[in-house]
Image (cartoon, rainbow, N blue to C red; front, side, top):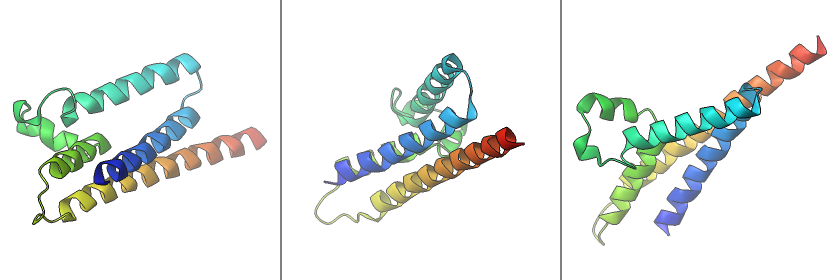
Length: 121
């Protein structure tokens, strides 16, 4: 159940990021390129493709500013969860992901509004 909730949180992040990129970039080809660079870049530095133990401390600090890092943190915490463990770390990771989703949505709405106002002028 926690894995599904975490995946749902990350889905909201991806939707928000897609909404933002879709409004921020005009060219369809540029959108495809930007999405590939962002998604693969976040995956590499966040521990999806490469175990975090192999990454340097600087990369780990940079990765903590990405939503993928918090998704992986929650998955790792869920995988080691026992009956006596606290779910607070998992919930914190999920809330941080939802914060990223809200930020991306807000950025997308701001860009859409700016474009709308520019088209009216």
